[in-house]
Amino acid sequence: MSPSEQHTPVFDRIATGVPGLDPILGGGLMASGVYIVVGEPGAGKTILANQLCYEQARQGTRCLYVTLLAESHSRMLANLRSMAFFDASQLPQRIYYVSGFRMLEEQGLPGLLELLRREMRNHGAGILVLDGLVQAQEAAGSSRDFKKFIHELQVSAGLTRFTALLLTSSVGPTVHPEYTMVDGILELRERTAAMRSWRELQVRKFRGSASLSGSHHFRISEAGVEVFPRLESVVSRAQPPDWGTQRVRFGVPTLDAMIPEGLAAASTTLVMGPPGSGKTLLGASHLAEGLRLGEPGLMVSFYEGPDRLLHKAANVGLSLGSAVRDGRLTLQWNMPAECNLDMVAHALLEDVRKRGVKRLFVDGLSAMVETTHEPARISPFFAALTQELRRLGVTTFFTLETPRLFGPDMDVPLGTGLSGVAENLLFMRHLELNGRLRRLLSIFKLRDADYDPTLREFLITPQGIEVQPPFQPSPELLLTGIARFPGNHS
Image (tube, rainbow, N blue to C red):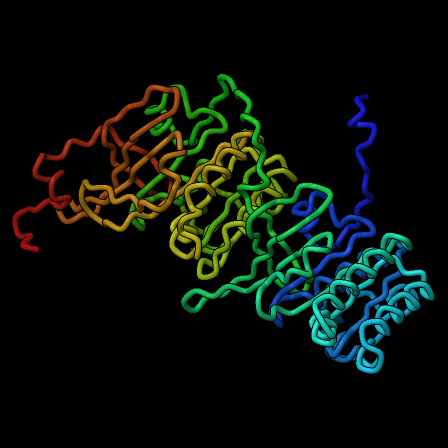
């Protein structure tokens, strides 16, 4: 062991009980640290701090929660009762609420500091929450007095080994010069664009270890605060393993015949086409073939609900319902109007790792592209997602809706970020021929395998889906995408 390793300090960690937050902090808060949580009213500071207290109380640690001109304790507890983390049995033995506002008014910061020390000592607490630091800051006679207050609080935390969380509203600059004295600063904020809003958490400072930089989405639900680390910051940087000669097929004999060797295992396939061209059923067939071979599957959709998708697949002979019931196939449905990239990725990857998913079908990628409030993130996000899926050995099938209904031209949404990282590209389109609407399929690109590049008609029947022999329309038909026949003057 080198001298530097011998003298490397080892810090105990404090679990926050907030899903997703501890990984961002590198494992949790540092024991005996003093941390500031800053955010506008309603940002979620009080819920986060209480979540920490109840988590630590369950582990046997006593917590002291001190308020300064905040909502009454009875009102706070009434609001917390609907949260999953709330446990009334922890009150008041392990979580004790105290108001320090009168002491602050009568004796200023020295009186407040003495109150905190006395209550921490009397209750043998290991966690201190001071809710309303902005009131203490306003009560300070000078900036020097406020710095002295924080410094003495840090000294007390170090001597008696308690961890402190100081909650404050944003007043003036987000980070005041005095805040540089503490061990860490967590900022909670709410963003608004057009008619949408979302919540973000950022670690502005964290002493003692590395933390994940940038902004991370979080939400407040009945579970409390849930943080979703930015995908690009948490995926493995290691090169994906070489899956060798392993191959996968669609389970459609006439289509598989166009790809004699099959798709490369753990590759990404993007199927583009207009609505109704058959993209969803092709993806469902990809899953059904995997299930037949004993490979767990996952389908993520944005437009059609699970029941409708199962019914749609059953109409063409793809029975997926039994696989859903016995857990071999999971269906995740997301509301497209409020799409959040990291929440979708978190749920997706969690199921992949938990069940060892080998085939993934993401239907309706356009919803993620069009409804996200972060269009500049699309390309790096999908690069990180597909890289992680390859590392996990998942063969992935994405569908992307194109705006043009007819004709040979392909309008690829430039902001998807996926067409550049997908190894396999398939294109589906519509064609009006002799008064009948036909579906066409062609392969644009395939990774490490030969393929048939001919244009094929794609049929959907009650018996299943199949690909017809090469389609040979006239040059005029290819240019227009519409075939005229006698009597058709449209």
